[in-house]
Image (cartoon, rainbow, N blue to C red; front, side, top):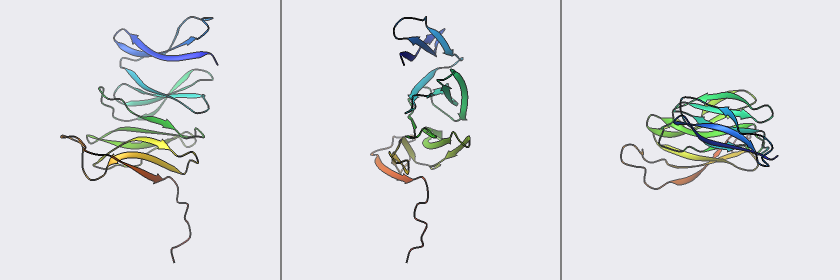
Length: 171
């Protein structure tokens, strides 16, 4: 469609707005809070936009009716950007959030409305990205040390299986 979704400041905080690209309608406020909105990510089917609201919430806008819903409570540090990614069938949202001073990878299921911390470690993992077939989640991280307080060093790419596809016992 010809609708633009964007953030801009509103009384000191960023808020989410929409505007028709052809100028046929005025700017419309979709979501405003007493905190910043950041890290917008559109779903592959272009039916949803997920974003971080403030320091503690992952939100989602349904673009069919512009309704806003909270998906998860998580910790976000204000001065950082965070990666959010939809699975290719848009049934899951993977995102990174802070846990014990390190980034962890979380997975939200739109079908079950459940949130899972996939990594839950004392090391920092981030940049979750689904494989096109939906069987794996790729992420970056340094699994041999923490990033707090000195920094994380070199990251590697890891492949995490999302389902147990090998059900036959090893012989």
